Image 1 (cartoon, one colour):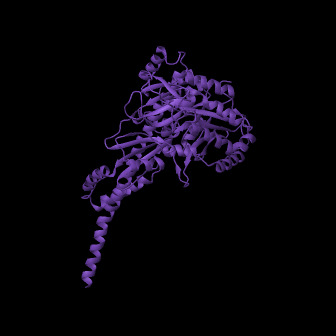
Image 2: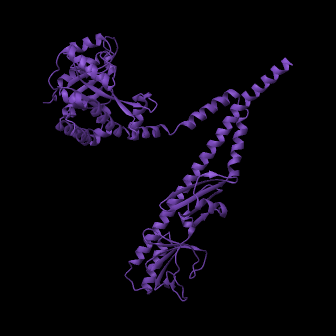
Image 3: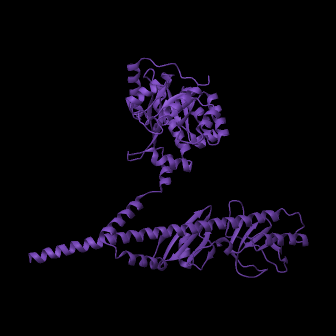
Length: 529
């Protein structure tokens, strides 16, 4: 009995272990497939609304156009004008003219019968009376949608409002927000249609998967038979059944992880910008001659709601590619003012370096923003240095204009990560820069016998020749510091002095450095002054 019990328990656990991961994965696959199908149907519904709005707008414009005609009503010229309008406007089939509520003529010609204007189903906010279904008594044919404005009406084939390309089997309907059906495609079920137009929603019932969209008084519904969804799912399930428990569990884990992702990486970054999730850490800049802290480079960090930090190299490239880097730069500037306003006002020799993207250098739009946010703070423009990499100077003429304007406002401008881009000498000679920042990759070669070891000294000599301040990035060893001192480099930053610090730690570092190395130097002036 004991042996049988052990075998029974082991078999049960083996069965659960073999089937549960696959069952969970299939359930999640079903849920995700349904949601994806609903999203696809919602996209079709939105396209239908766009098409309906376009057709309705075209018909409305036709009404207003014919209402301005200078011809005597129902003359040959007048009827010809209505006919031309009907022929040339894809949204309408027929134009009619009414006098005292009686149809006198149409784009087909004079009207022999007495046809009175009947009240419409509803009136749009701009005064157009709409009849959802009206059978043309003059031209005959199927029911049309009628629009009436002033003394004129136009007839629209309802199919024009749903004339979009959809996959076979997808049924489309469009109506107004009062539940009045206006047009349909592929013969949707009338019962389902009335229900969804009266109560627009996205979901699934025993027979259909459906989605709805609403916009500016329109309601569109897209539905598809549930059977059409089951067939591909069955085929996929048959492919998944042979998959082992380990791989099934792995796949389920990936699907769960993916399903919990709120948005794509770009979507998450967009939300982070909207929620102002960016903070600033400050990399101290040290004057090598005195050892005091004369400023800091503002380095952006993305702090998620759970408190975790995302490093810049994981999101800055995407921000630059998408254009989100500009609002992020604005938030950096706001953070600098919030964090260091008191310190910057107290010590006018202190400066903060802000990194600018290529678009800000090209357009110069950041300058007016900085000017606006600094104005009420008491912080001087001279205390905000602007840095850009060589990529920001590819469009040299607009870059020069931005730099000139920045320096007129009082900012110093530095070329960052110098030597890692293209045409470096061209930039230095053609742009009125104040400072040059030597990239860490060159600082790392100091004391090493490498092919690029001599480049650092050439960069320093070049900067001195052009009368630029020199800032060395990424200083980590005493040997590097001594080399930079011996070669007359003005400033340095790097882990030898301090890592990038939160605002409070940077303020404490600054005060400690001032107390340890005496009072600060005079305010740093433009190299060109």
